[in-house]
Image (cartoon, rainbow, N blue to C red; front, side):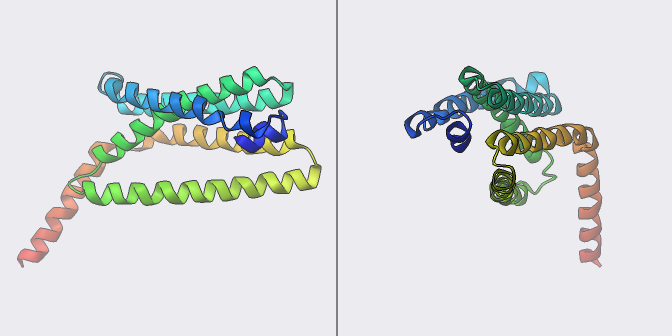
Length: 186
């Protein structure tokens, strides 16, 4: 976000370092709110809400660059924080609830997947931004493409959500565990 603020909005380093206040504090607040409300609204609803709000936030960032509106930039950061806070907590709870007796394994896999996703996302988006910036010399185009990819990723994740079933995973895991125990007993 900081390079976007500098390249597109012409903000100084001292101004762009304040982005974390907007994004991070909102994300933390909505992680807490979601944690308390998740049983009332449901896991999949919370995930879909968080993904949708985060995608809208990236769209607002895209518009802030096109229209050169700093107010939209800060609004976009806050909206992204709301979405990420909600989706982070609900995704973690959803993953843990699908544990089928292997919570530790899934927590480890979640941490690994999160780290790999952050690494590949930062590297890939940075490469796309640099390529487009070098090729077209347009920060708006480069960051706009990156934000559109973020919107696409959140949209795909939301559309895939109905395919996941906690009950089905638990049934299949139970059958697999019973098979292993039966083989071990022989």
